[in-house]
Image (cartoon, rainbow, N blue to C red; front, side, top):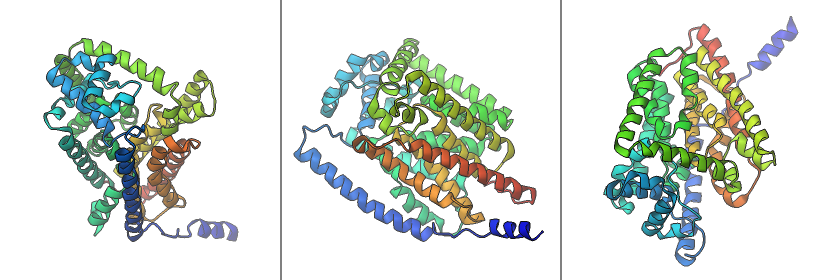
Length: 420
């Protein structure tokens, strides 16, 4: 009897808390200094070595802006015509002339949404687009994580948000990952409360269909039938409206561009594998044949999807659901760029809220630090060319979250559930 009791006391020994709000602010301040140095070097290279292959800030937003220009001054199909779109983009943004090609790889739903962007000059639209995305993402993360329930967290959270590597990387490129992550977070938050709003958010994710990969599985696991119905309706209506505006031909051309992205980028572009934190990219960098890499990734994806479904079926804690969905989506999806790691920001916010409120489990704080740094590592890996560590971090995070969900289930049996 004594041995089990000693083991129990050892297992329940409190975990040392080193990731405090004060240290989060300190670490954020240090990383802001690094950003300043990085941007200074970047600006120097652009000014004094303009012939280098260095991209300007907002390179991806420039693609969105070019597509908007075509929508306003040309025809929608031209966005999917590779020679036409490449020539226009190079004419509008001279630094694209050094690119092999510039392609529009998004569905008609996103082509419809970006239409107004070219109404503003690029120099104004780009910072506004980034600022809007950061605010929406920050508000969504603040709401779903429950950090608003902890006194004094507003300033800490705002400072940490601005300094987060995932925010820096996405902002530098001018990508839309802020908006997709916010839609996913709010869809989870409203899934049990307001199915119509949750379905609308899921419908908006049709601008990047691969990022909505897990929603059908987890919603079925949670038996959220009304949310599923609203999501199907919203996605169908949004798709129909985009086809009405962009034309039926846009669907065929989008399918062709998706095939182009699969063949040239996903399957055979080595530089993409260095910047893609997915099991598929790691398998390809390790030299696995294409078919074997796909099969191995499918096995890992199946495990991630099953883990997410298990958590959604057993836990009603919004924080755990959001964190698991975000991480599992990044694991299961083979086509993920470094800027999509802003989804990890949702998991980090939820895990911080849980740890600061309910106490830490072993390994959680270390895993948060690894998740926090991963976007910057993946962003710089285009130059560093280091082995792909992304899958190790995301799979480790998924394991930590599974343990937290199990711990939360035991707490729930004693009346300890929390739903923000």
